[in-house]
Length: 382
Figure 1 (cartoon, helix red, strand yellow):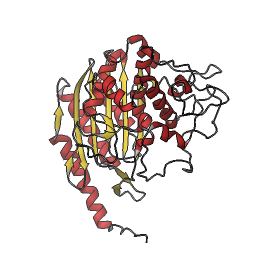
Figure 2 (spheres, rainbow, N blue to C red):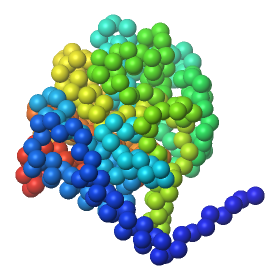
Figure 3 (cartoon, rainbow, N blue to C red):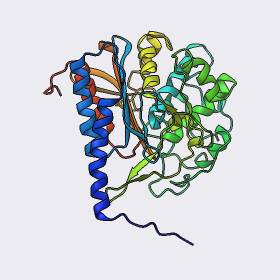
Figure 4 (spheres, rainbow, N blue to C red):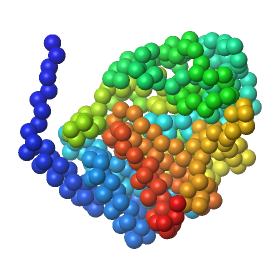
């Protein structure tokens, strides 16, 4: 029997909207976290931008951080991590990263390459024999740059995990079953086709190259060196302190709990959880060459090209763009109950992180606004 949910009365919706706006503004002022060296003027400007963004988009909770001079200089939580239990978001609240898991996984791949354990240009079956052979070989380099020809999610959802699903995948090899036998969307190397499933193959490759589970290698070789003590896989069934609840705004504008998501089938491409504090530490570690040598990092941040020589604007796990007359490496993410964005500016030794617990929100807009404030860039700069 299907149970119909009662719709809230219009008066209740109106009161909720007023309450929500006031709540957002209250927490923006009442919950300062790491102030460090960011000036009072910049903090006030960022908090005002965050409060305005959250009110305009009905965002329940959000955390943000800024890296300056290669070090985390400011982080703060705003709004609520859990509306039902009235738990505030802080800079240590854990959010689903969505696709900004990809730059972390790419960093892991480049580490293994640097250490001579992974050939980026070898067929993936050298490390992941569970993935079937194709007419043309697919390499890890191509997968990291979305040139492998592996499909992304189907528009109709056929062949994918249902949008609301707690189906758990016990291994990377089991996750391959979702797409491994599907036809390629293009010959490897010929077309940029964004694919989270491609990163599941990357995870299988990394496990083969490292001879251990993906998340275990990640913990020892990325999270610990970068001092990311809170970051780990988004285990749907585990009790994880400080993990936020997930929200979605329906067509009528009402904020509801988001759908169920067990991301065990896509950990390398969208299944990691972290905090604004930890992601700022990741940015600082990347900028300070603590995770990769400078030459390796630059390779990771260089745009790949299709077979006909066209640049894709995407390196190995990182998006590449020029904005504010600056060269920026960045990524965004989104899935049930989360929207995320982060960026680093190597020439300024700076970065920004924005994580929120609502899906379908353009947090990159806010991230760029915070970056502009933090770096004293004029508003008119394109």
